[in-house]
Image (tube, rainbow, N blue to C red; front, side):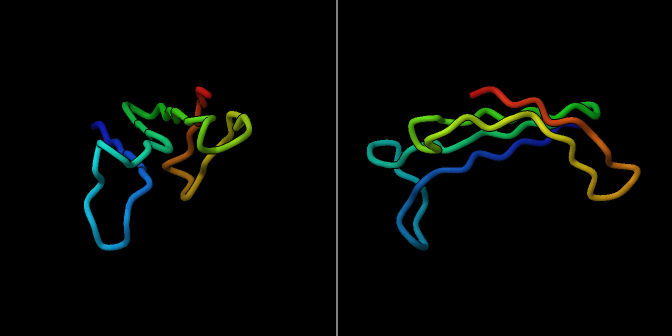
Length: 66
């Protein structure tokens, strides 16, 4: 299974516009591994890798790329 999510800045109730909106982060989960790509220009400081366990069967380490 693979899952991904792209977070962008955007106007309320609008779809993102590639001409003006910024990608803040991209998350990806594949085969029990999780990755987070962070835009430091938007975030302002580095994000450290972390553990995420919403339920015991979904425990994983999130590897962060800044």
